[in-house]
Length: 143
Image 1: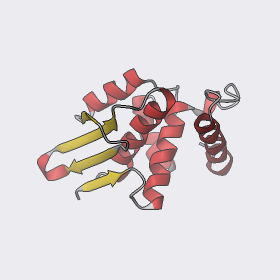
Image 2: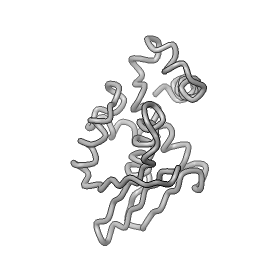
Image 3: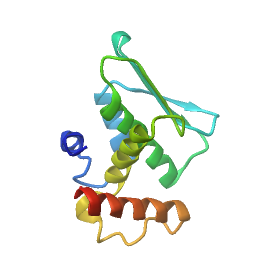
Image 4: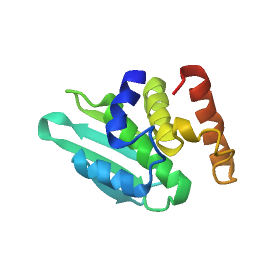
C-alpha cells in the first residue's frame, strides 16, 4: 500500500488536497474516459489489451460524495489495473480492493499534512465517517 501511495505523489495525491479539477487532469493524463450515469453507483472498467479505461459516475452525486467517488475509482485504476481486465463496481468487489480504493480517495481528499487542520469534513455523517477512517489510516499505516 505504501508503495502505491508513494507512486501517486506524481499526481499530487497525498501532497495536497485534490479537487475535481485534479481528477479531470489525472483522467486526461492517464487516458481514462469518464461517463455520467443515471444509476446511483460508480464503477471502473479497464481492458488493458484494448486500451480501454472508463470511470462511470452517478449524475446525482455532488460535493464531497462525488469527490470521494471520483478518487475511489481512480484508486481502482492505480491499485488494480494490470494486464488482466478489471470491472470494479461500487460495493461489489473484493473487500481488500475496496479498502485500497477507499484509502486512495481519503488520502486524495485529506493529505497527511492536513489531518490536524481539518477537524471535520463538511458536517455530514458521510464527512465524519471519511474523517474517522482517514485518521485510522494515518494511525495504523502512517500515511
